[in-house]
Every structure is written in C-alpha cells, then in structure tokens.
Length: 302
Ligand SMILES: CCCCCCCCCCCCC/C=C/C(=O)SCCNC(=O)CCNC(=O)[C@H](O)C(C)(C)COP(=O)(O)OP(=O)(O)OC[C@H]1O[C@@H](n2cnc3c(N)ncnc32)[C@H](O)[C@@H]1OP(=O)(O)O
Image 1 (cartoon, rainbow, N blue to C red):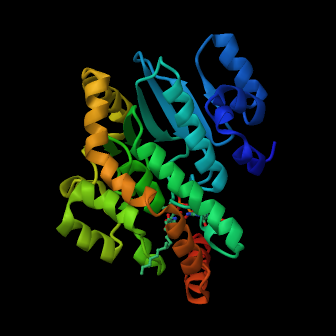
Image 2 (image 1 turned 90 degrees about the vertical axis):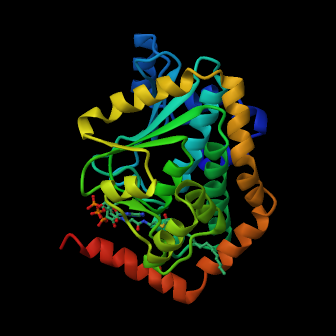
C-alpha cells in the first residue's frame, strides 16, 4: 500500500495500527521473529519498536540509513508507532534512540525541502507538524537516548521528549542550526527550545545556529545528562524508572498543563503555518541556499 493511501485511511484504521503495520510495513522476517519469540515487538520500514528489559517500557529506534533524515515516510511511521504504543495498555514509557551509527537524526530530509512541488511541500510539512504535536503531547513518558549527531529536526524531535540523555562524544553535536542553512526555524521550533533552555540562551543558540558538543549542550540545558556511550541505555532506563514511579494520571495532567498552551499556538494556525512554509521554501533564494548546502554535504567526503 502506498504511503499516500495509508494517509488517506480513516482515523479508526490509524487507531489500530497493529494491523496497519503488519499489513503495510512489517518485514516478513521480523514479523516471524516477533511471533516466534512471543515478544511484543513490531517494526516498520524505518522504525523498530521492541520491549525494553523493564516492564512497560518500549525502545523505539529510528532506522533510516545512513543518517536518519526525517523523510515523509519516517515521520509517518514514527507517528503510527507512537500511537500504537499509546493504545497498548502495556506500555507507559518509550526510549527514543537511533539504529544508525553515530547519528541520532540529521534532521528533516533535505531532499524533501528541495525541488518538490507545493502540494508535496504541504504534505511533508503537515507530517512534520503531526510528528511534533503527537510526540510533544504524548501521554507516555518519552526519554531520548541520543546516540549520535542531533542537528535541526533531529534536535526538535529530541526536544519533544520529557528527558534527554546524550552520549559523551565530541562528534555528537546538537542544536537548531537552521540559520546556517539560510532558513528560519518556525515559531514552534523556537518555542520548543525556548521552553527547554530559556529565553536568553535561545536568542544565541537560534540566531547563531549553534551546534553544541555534549558538555555545552548540558551546560545550557539542551540535554539533562551526558553519559559515557556504553551507559546510555542503562541510564535512560534508570531515568525512566524514576518517571514511571509517579502515578500516570497525575503526571499526564501535569505534563498537559505545562505543554498544551505551546501546542495550541500551532494547533490554532496549522494551515497558515503550512502556507508560510510552502511559500518560504518555494522562494528561489531559499532553494538556492538549500541546494548549495546539500552539495557541500555531499562534497565533504571528497
Ligand atoms: C518571517 C519569518 C517567516 C518564517 C517562515 C518559516 C517557514 C519554515 C522555514 C523552513 C524550516 C525548515 C526547518 C528545517 C529543519 C531541518 O531539519 S533541515 C536539515 C538540517 N540538517 C543538517 O543540517 C544536518 C546535515 N547533515 C550533517 O551535518 C551530517 O550529515 C551528519 C548528520 C553530522 C552526519 O555526518 P556523517 O556521518 O559524516 O554523514 P554524511 O557523510 O555527512 O552524510 C551521509 C549522507 O547523508 C546525506 N545527508 C545528511 N544529512 C541529510 C539530511 N538532513 N537530509 C538528506 N540527506 C542528508 C549526505 O548528503 C550524505 O549523502 P551522500 O553524499 O549521497 O552519501
């Protein structure tokens, strides 16, 4: 089934994504392995979800090699996977991490931002909004175990989580670097980081497009903990245990009380935000900037 067909499915189908994932994206081998092991494990092409050793906790791994760029497909699968976990009473918390070596996520897929038509830009941006809204407002406890570079949209995804643990590696830079690409982070990207690191630090980080190494990311509050790489998952599990010790209903209502107003700012103007994006990204000067950036990335190796 094509992705566009998945997106056109009625809401009730999306509320039962087990079937959807089985039918659409679950690899046969993985499905067989899941049944054979009796484990509540599922996967789609770009997202692998497996139960953690701790009860009630799932590990969600992004796997869109080489760098987990957030394509329309990956964004859609992330939302479906989260919704599936939310609808499964067994799970109370999710550890979000990467299956790609040394990159958590390289951010929005630049190929989605270049050379496409307005309808496709609109569809893509709606999926970016949806990912942010669903993850930001999730009832589950979300802990990001950041095991690689985390620029731009990758950083945004981690900022939707309740807690961020970053592996201590100088190559694992993190931040919203949009200005360095000649583009502007939308207001809800800005809100996400400002709610996390505060007003003054955001003024600097966002205007400069800073990509911070672990010690600086910790100092500014972009992450909550930096740990040796081999302790990343165990730390994320310890953090999760602490959060899950709190009664769900009280924690969920508190989370919603803190986050809903930020989400509402986007919810009230989703269509206008899509139109802004489409008109901004379609400008010749912006397209030129992005093409140049993408070329530089490709030439970096040579
Ligand atoms: C008045 C105000 C109006 C405001 C209106 C606002 C409207 C909205 C405006 C638009 C907002 C857009 C917001 C955008 C958010 C984003 O997320 S943009 C993406 C930004 N991402 C980056 O800058 C990261 C780029 N990548 C890297 O820095 C590195 O790749 C890495 C992640 C550090 C990994 O390095 P390394 O392991 O060395 O891998 P590479 O060799 O660099 O890459 C491997 C291949 O992957 C390709 N690639 C990398 N990143 C991306 C990507 N994001 N998208 C697509 N492809 C990517 C890279 O080119 C390599 O390709 P090949 O050479 O073909 O192998």
